[in-house]
Length: 367
Image (cartoon, rainbow, N blue to C red; front, side, top):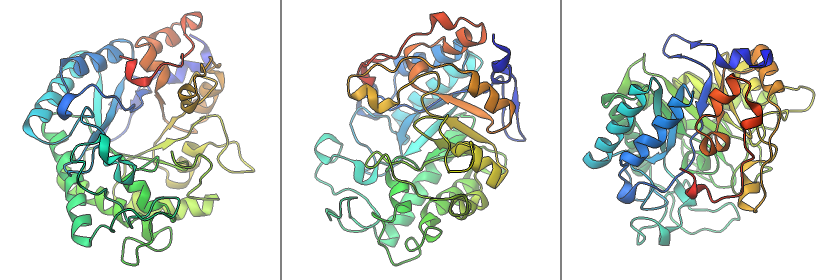
């Protein structure tokens, strides 16, 4: 193993979470759970990544209990007896292999294509019923409906704790429901859930507070957010560190333990005048642990794969240097780990010549 990557394979320890190394499996949407129920194939999929050296699994997005939360019938649910029993088997498989696991709980909001989703006759949920292109296609969520959604997230987190998950991640990134509340173009509300950047965090902060009340003080809560959106890769919620601090404070105060900072390329600086990436800035501002993510070990970002381009491989030396500098604490690996379950072991043992380019396959074909 290169000395520059030593820290990647050291123990991570906080008051609420201990991991054997700093390699995290990034959540990657899959369509292998018919009727929302994860089967034994899902358990074995995650088990293999732990056996290959990953310390923490963050599952694919799994939807909260709302009839329009899911984008597809084969995306897993995190509610209902059958789905939760399936997830219990996944937890047991990961624990037996020596790893830890957290579900990413999710609601797609206006990103749902109703004709492809469960309950196609129902309208999508969104802050204001407005798409990013100013098109209105639904009515705004009522305050009662917002409250029900907050409870749905808290119920999912409580279920995760009950069946043995090691924590929970809230998906607040990439233009899905929580992120739609953050985004000024989609959130035109004039109640407590809309307004300036800080007020637009209220929905997410209430979710985190409700989860904390449901699971207690010692259960880890990860919050994933991004500046970019699937609708606009150049978008930025915060244009500078001061705006980022204003955005993060309500979430940190609500009870987030770790921020998962989604970027397309982890090596790119977030703001001019500093080499810090998004995870680096978040750690500097909040003092909380952060997870970095974005084309780890690869040249091109994930969207290149959908254009038929291979991703290539990229040196990890700068990743090790950033870890050594305490820019961030954990490293989430997505595509490379999906393609090769043994990626962490190969990196640890210096078997870089065995790492493969990520080919331009459909993500749904990768198991």
